[in-house]
Structures are given as C-alpha cells and as structure tokens.
Amino acid sequence: MKPKRTMAIVLLIVAGLLLTGALLIPRAFRRFFYPPAPPMPSVVATPVAQILSDLEANMKKKAPQVLDQMQPGLSDQEIAALEQQAGIQLPTEIRALYQWHNGCRSADPRVVGPIPGHRFLPLSEALGLPTVLSNQVAKATAVQKAAFGIFAGHTRSWITLFDDGAGDGYFFDPRRKPEEGAVFYSFAEDCTYVFFPSLRNLLAGAVKCYETDAFSWTNAPTGPALTEDFTRTTKIWESFGSSNIR
Image 1: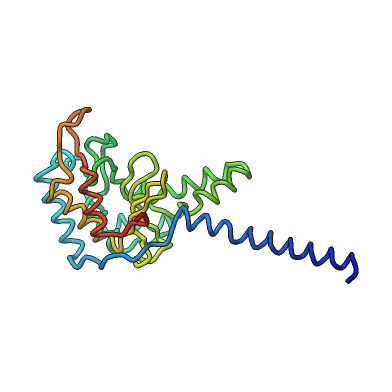
Image 2: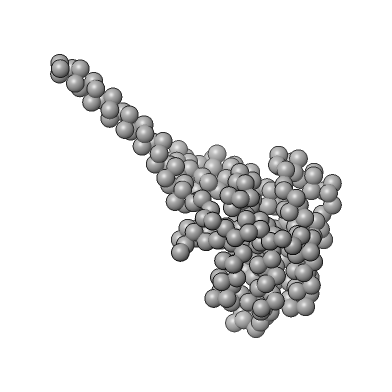
C-alpha cells in the first residue's frame, strides 16, 4: 500500500472517531445528568381532583399558614391564554393543579408549599422560565453555550412546579411521556432524581406526608415554619416514585 494512501486512510479513521465522539459524548453526558427513569410504581388510581381536595383538607388542618399564601385557581380560559403565549399545551393533571391554586403569593421559605421549602410557582412564572433561560443562553459566549449544552442543556424544556430557590425542585418535562418520568424531583448537586409516573403520584405522596406528619408546622430555629422530616419523606416519595440512586 502506498504511504500517501495509508495516511489518507488513517486520517479518515481519526476523523470518523472524532465525529463519533462528538455525537456520542454529549449524549452520554445528557444520560448522566438527566438519566432515563427506572421502573416506576403504578399510577395512583385516585382522581387528581380528589387528591387535591385531600391535600387542601390536610393543609387546612395542619398548615393553614401555608394555605393562606396560596393564590386562587385559574380558569380554563386563563390557563389556555398562558398556554398559547408559551406555545405549549399542558396535560390535564397539570391544568388541574393550577385550577386548584395558582401557586404561592409568598417567597418566604417558611410559608411556601404545599411541599416544605419549595415555592409553588404561579403558572405565568413557571411557563416563562424556559424563555428566560433561552435568552440568557443566547447572550452567552460560545464556550459558555457549549458548557451549558453539555451540563444543563437538558433543562431547557423543564417547567418548574415547586422550586427550592436554588435551581432544584419538582419539575414537569413536556418532552417526556408520563411513563418516561415526565414529572420528577431533581437535586442537581449529586444528580439525584425521583421520577413519578404521574402528577397524581407526586400529589398523593404529599398528602401522605401530611397525614403521617412527615410534613409539619413546627418551631424551627428561624421561627415557625412548614418543615420536612427527610428520613420519613424519602421512604414516602420512593413508594410513589422511583429514584435513580440505589
């Protein structure tokens, strides 16, 4: 084989390997930072309207201070207008959540809820965050855009339902099907996820937390607040969902 031909073949092989790496490595990073959902429990059979009614009753009894911070629910027309503005159609269960209450008025972590330490975002704010993120990325440098694409590009489509104020919380991803874990908890620092097969499972888990006092109104060091017993809630969440950490 002639030397020039050999060199050309080597270069083609190297180019092929580089191209393959360029295609596969980002996918590997995405799977690491946003893994597929493991096998999940069955969808809770109770209708979402009943679960929300039970959640309201438990909050009224055990955390009325938090319930007082909830905004009135939205009408079908109001939700439809926000959907049209954002260019998205929400599933029935997400719409039901916002017909129940349109998020929290307060941003005070002591009185946000229904999940302790997580603010229930009003729908206009929740649907607006992906646009805010896209605008921020558009203004970034090429290096920053590349880094974002690798480490956080998967979050572009996420709609934040319950936010802890530090980028973690409970989300809905319209790009995933319910059986793929479209509703989930994410803790970015260690890539921990709890995937739920339905919003009903997440909300039913919250009801269980109130019923067992895993969520409770207590005198915390910073004052009275809705608090969470993480040892107990971890077991409850994983009975309604499935974690990627075993």
